[in-house]
Image 1: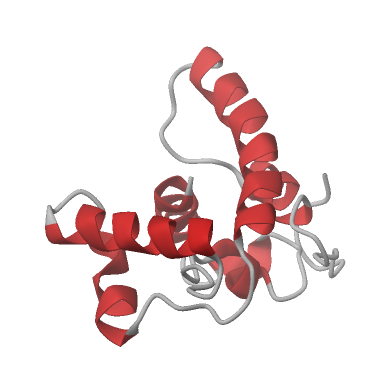
Image 2: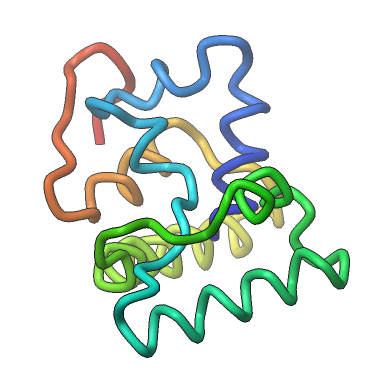
Length: 125
């Protein structure tokens, strides 16, 4: 999900995050790691490191070098976003197999995160 978000925002151009129309879109749209104080999230952090070291998620190299501890529970947020992502991605693939999502699609995904709000400047869902 975060890989698709990353490359979709890049495809939107220089002001990609602003085009989505979500307050703090970049914060909501970037992977922030997991809370190492929670057993399941700590395990997920270990898996994240494995994916990066094995070359399967190279976009997260900087985060892994910095540390994957988000110091806050993230799994529920990611799961909420993933529910929206699956629906949007399914439609994108059915509609011609495009590999990038529109600003409107990205907005739907980011607004699924608890606390995310529209900012009124980008595409509206």
